Image 1 (tube, rainbow, N blue to C red):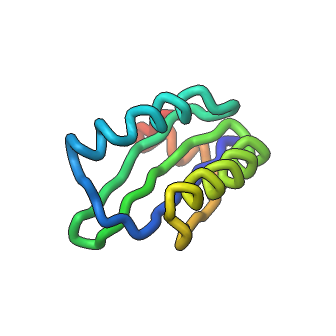
Image 2: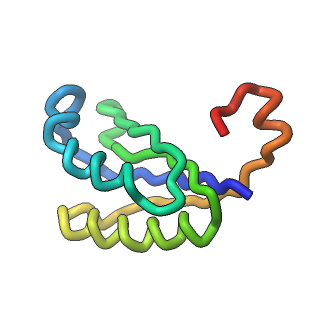
Length: 100
């Protein structure tokens, strides 16, 4: 069953194109994570937060990635990391055109 991982953390910027340039190396690294189907990068200047929504093939893959990513973010100085794991209801999601 697919698993959705939601992560957000306080982030002071940069935003937009500068964030893209600064984190391209991380995006390339994340793209080859075992079990990752996709990631949507999120950013909110108003809330001062960044993060992502991920879809993994299994709970094990999501949990392994979360542990690795927490360590990577902590090494970059981001320590207040919020994370949630959700099982995906495939049938209902497919009715609403989810990219599963």
